[in-house]
Length: 561
Image (cartoon, rainbow, N blue to C red; front, top):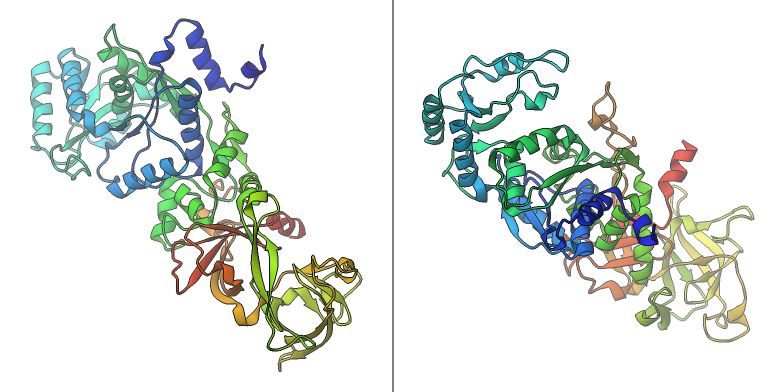
């Protein structure tokens, strides 16, 4: 077996096997089929990368199809968001399709099934149908309406279509086998009455096809060769094939459904219903809140498309579900941002440093490297003056030998600048340090080539010049849930595990080079983490989101707790 063969996932092995048996490569076609009833989340990313990745691997078309058969939950807002997310991830679809494009064809095929004695109108209540369907160990019993005549079924189905019946009064069911071991085969519902306007067809229809009837037939209409679903659809495969048997023609490609396992992400939920609950209960600000696992939320937080694609590639495609630690996703965004993010200086919790032997009138512009990982990134100049901000926790009056930051009588180097020594400090009435008086060694300037500039001190601090600093709002995001599997507890609601400290909003000071930073631009705030410019940002008020800290601080917190 070649190295390339060894690298294939099991879905690719299925495709390769089909090709080896004579399936024409030019007839390969894939699709990504979301329902537009919410925003895409990180769980969808694996499916997107799988289907579009197959398209790229085999130079085959991939359709983006919206399974829009439930007007009660679907909206154009979600359609637009899905298209935006797929494009942002870097993929191009061949055709933009909608299940609603096929409503007339699906209806015509339903008429065919009725005429062939394969479908009937059932007038039972939903409770009655649930009772007569049986259990996994007991067969169901036939509906009292199962043997209606073809003529009566056609009439009733036409009247359902014409809007003559209220919701819940009638459904169209496939006539299969009420004793089947697979309960999905016990006369599944094909159509229900819904008097709701549809986001594309408006009020043209008041009967809507169910997912199982729509999905395989849509694959067939589009001539999708491989219909890839998550594992919960494995029991549906038998029904998928039964429905295809009723409509398939000899000269057409028969789609093949195959299933792969979901990859659940720790410290979050990916159920659209639960995500909607977070939005509606104002736990988050919206579907694109940077704490949400939606692709829109991850993008707003500062995750890159490449980091999400790399994450999906790393976790791969498997046949069994498992829980993936969110730290792996954070690793991939750190790895990518380390390569592309310019380094800048920002102070999140400032205390003033006054360099007493530095001229009050003087300002120097120090040369600073933009990104040591990228030689082409070049340099910028940052202003240095008598008054600076450093971080509060970078100073202690007294500290042990392992504290390598600034302390009274101790020296540190200021990044790209000079070595300073803390001589004294000023405190407020509560004992908090408000100002640190320092002296500097004028011959120790970084890069000056003097002997003093090469002098080693153990600590290097970032800083911002007070008169040049730009005030900015910084949003420090953390994991939305304190539990790694918040929706896996039988005795507790997932909402009980919401992290009360998932968002902290602070006022920070940033270097002046960030004055014109654009929305979604990425930066490394040196020694602090990776940040990006939020969509709320304006020229008058910069707003930054913390994407991730430089290191996995959560793991250290958990070890201590």
